[in-house]
Image (cartoon, rainbow, N blue to C red):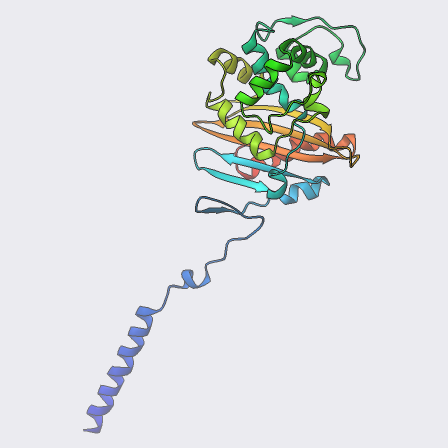
Length: 290
């Protein structure tokens, strides 16, 4: 009888061990690592945690970047507060200035020449006759000042408002050829991305011809794998500080997707200017786009 009881007890022990194994979570579930929480940003239900901050530290600059993945509806960013802060657009406004100038007919096309006024400026390449395709690549200030004066204050204000660009404030009539450099116009990095998305989609209030020409002259790099359309900018930060700000905005097209970016940094020396593009390229590499 004792042997029977011992056999039954042994069977019960074995069964209990088997049950414990069956209900125990898998080892992979128990030890699955928690995703890093470096500068997370939530877009929809997806939290993005790529750490762009290390690039700013390595290059020794302060600033922000936002990259929006169109197909995935994901926003990757560093320094969200700054991405919601408005700054002078500086030469990034040349994108909209080009659209307005073409649409209003103050210049006929991207190859039409404007004659240099003979005034020597700090960039030697500016000191000659230029067309729009050349001027946007060189970021020639005088060329776009001429276009802005030709458009005029009333028409410029109307088109800036129609495009819903930044705070839409171009200031007084006397500011017509400088409002994007030292005037009242302001735009945030996030608004830059919204504007670029509308440009890409042909959702701005301009003809297909104007949109197509400006997209074409914005190309800064084209390979079999991707195309980058972009514009730099550099302007004073404001009267309260001697710091200046630098921009690099645009978008990368790859296959059937587009990635929109807006980089904004403090420029404290001429060496910092190169960081605008370098930062952007490093962050795009983080996303395996370059």
